[in-house]
Every structure is written in C-alpha cells, then in structure tokens.
Length: 206
Length: 216
Ligand SMILES: [Zn+2]
Image (cartoon, rainbow over all chains, first blue to last red; front, side):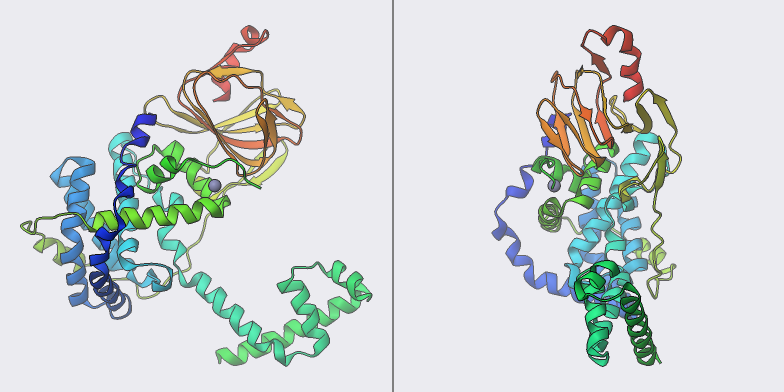
C-alpha cells in the first residue's frame, strides 16, 4: 500500500525550468477559456479542445490502459469545461490548472466506478474545484466591499458598533461592557446602523 | 493547533487522485481544517498540472465527432448557487457537522458498544476499512495493535495516547504493530482508516476480541 502511495512522487521534483516555455501558451489558454466563459465562443473552445484533447487522452491511457476509457475521459472532461466555463475565475488560478483538476476529478470517479461498479460522483466533495471558484464568494466579497464603502455614511457611534461586531467579531455584550453602555443601547445602535446600510445597498442595486 | 499532518507523499497522491477513497476522504477533510497543507497542496497540484501539460502527445488522433457532440449541449450562462449539503450527525447525544468530504455519506448506521460508537463509512478494496468513531468522555479504547497502518483524523474533541495529546484536525498515521492506548477526557469524534482488523493485546483482550471487528 505504502509503496503504491510513494509511486509517482518523484514526478514533481523535475526541474521547473521545463515549464517556462509554456508561458506564452498559458496566456492563450487563459484567453480561450475566458472567451468560452463570457461569450460561449465555439472557436475558442475548439482551440482549447485541440490543445487539451490529446493530453487528456494520454493521461487517460496512462491511468486506464484502455483507449475507450481514455476517450471517455476526454469527452466528459471537455464537456464539463464547455458547460461550466462560466465558473472559471481567472483570479484564482490558471485556466490550464482548472481544466487539469476537472479532469483529475472525473478520472477519480471513473476509477471508482471501475473498481466498485458504483455510479457515485464523489470527487466534487473531495476536491471542490468547481464550487471553490463560484462567484458566490465573489458576491459575498463584493457585498462586503460595498458595505465597507458605506460605513462612512453612518454616524460615528453607529460605525463604531458595526465595526466592533462585524469586523472585530465582538459580541454585543462584550461591546456594551467595553463602551460602558447598556446592552439595549448597543442593540438599538446596531439595528439603526444595519437598516441604514441596507437602504444604501438597496439603492446601489436599483 | 494542528500538530500532525499528512506526509508530502500522501498530499501528492491525494492531489493526483491516486489514493483509495477512504484515504482521500481523510486527506481532504484535513485540508479543510489545515491552511498549511492546503497551501502545499495547491503548489503540488499546479506542478502536476504542469507535468500534464508538458506531456508529449501525438496529434494523429481523430477527435472530430467529439467536438460536435459537446456542442449539442448548452453551456451554463450563469453560476447557480451551489447548494452545499451539510452533513449533520447525532451520535451518543452529541451533534456534529461533518467536513465537506463526508457530504456523500448521509446514511450512516451507528452501532454502540459501551463508550464507543462506530459507523462504517467506506469499505475499499484491499481490505481497507474506514469508519467514524465516537468515544464518550473519560473513556479509553482498550490497548490494541494492528497488522497494517492505522490512520486517525481527529474531527472533534481531543484524545491522548502514549505519544502525546491530539487536537482537532490532527492527522495521525501509525504503522505496523505499534501498540497504543488512546484515552479521551473530552470525548471525541474521529475518522479512522486501517488496512487490517485490530487485535487487542492487553489482559482484557481475550474478552474484548470481538470488539476488534466492531471498532473498525
Ligand atoms: Zn496539515
């Protein structure tokens, strides 16, 4: 078992310079995937396909030793790339690594299916490739930034309460003690501050 | 504070999808709790991807019909908020939320023996068994030894053995024939993977021997 784990571990200690020549290609791959993500651009996807299909096939042959399964891996990986491209977030990594991880995940599920005859897709729980990049956290992030930008519209006292509770994560009780105020005062300041911020945010969205 | 981490070899195998499911669950759950290993793993994955990209490939394969088949599908135009299934469990009167790596296992069947509750998670090939283990506070697991390896990922609580004190997130790998007697003061929830059934070695072991099968 341990022997099997150790296998392949030497691979990644290869000289890094080997990869430098890919930089120009990396840029192309990134821009293709962005075009697929934003414009569902078939031409750009065809370029991605031309570049990745032979590599995925080669990887599949290595893992499965079967042409048909290797071709399945190509088809399913590239289909996921086509369908899910909108989830790719260039701020969080290279396009090629994103595609690699999609293939890696699908590969894991295929291997399991081969071993257990079970149709479970569990890889997304193990490596949340797709979820990790959802604009979900971007939205939070954006909302966070918007909220912060509106802090200035609060009175000094309201701002103090919001900052302590949402940025410094104090409890309302801790803050009341800290400011030597009744808990009720802290609560009502917070309530007013939140409703003001809410109305500012709603104004942004209109 | 996490003190025990998977080896780099394990991180490499996990990132390359080369571990059995039982162990990948453990590494994945550890990564969820450990930013240090997450950083290392990101680098490993980037390197593995670079190797994948640098493969020599022949361009003589005909993929043409595949592209048409793919274009029959419509791409997603926007991101639907993914519903992350949170797996909450209730065992021995305690409620826990399991790491994301366990989301799939919503149908856990717990069996109890004294202070110990166990639910089988996966049974991989090669005789690997993986279970969630809950141990009530102020309890010991009888001293035992094993033929293969035993991996314990501590999900909640703390426990200690001859070698030290373990905290939430610790990834404890024991090899061959190491005898140990875990004890928990707080009570704990662990995920345990091992590749051969336990054999108890202390005096009480004969009477408890069936427990060896129950625990893992
Ligand atoms: Zn770690």
